[in-house]
Each structure stands twice: as C-alpha cells, then as structure tokens.
Image 1 (tube, rainbow, N blue to C red):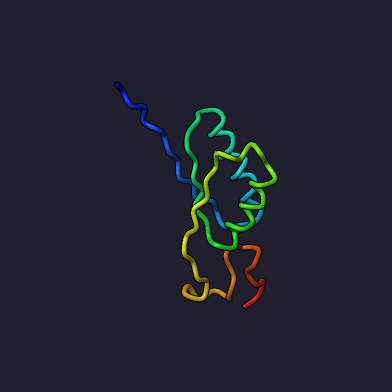
Image 2: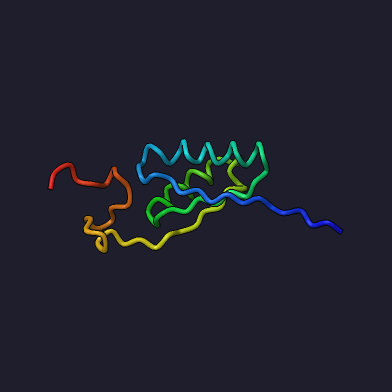
Length: 91
C-alpha cells in the first residue's frame, strides 16, 4: 500500500495589517488549487485578527494558524506592537 505524502506549506506574513487579508486569500487559493495543508505562523495579536477573518470565511476551514511567541518589549518596541500599524509615527 502506497502512502500519499501530504504537502504542507508554512507561511509567515509581513506584519502589516494591510497584508494579512491578501495573505489569507493567497493561502486559500493555494489550498483550493493544490490541496496543500496550509499553516500561517503569526504573532498573538495578529492571530486573533486572522482567527476572526477565517471564522467569517467558510472557504478558510483548511487554513491552520500557529502562534509564534512574541513580546514586543523584548525587541525594543512599545507594548502590544505586533504589526506596523501599531508603531508610533515618531520616537
């Protein structure tokens, strides 16, 4: 019996609010066209945003999310800064 190897793609979006929905649309297109298992790795706050977007879109049921541990303060950023939209305009 030959086992079928499941193709799996892990995607890491650029952390900008305007990139998340088009990135999710790209993941959906890849999953529908090729049947690959898709996992999007993202930070905790962006995970909440993507989870809400996926729950509104029944076509996204095959898209999996993985939470990357991230503390913005550990990287010299203001608290809860996980995408470019949350960055202050001035120092």
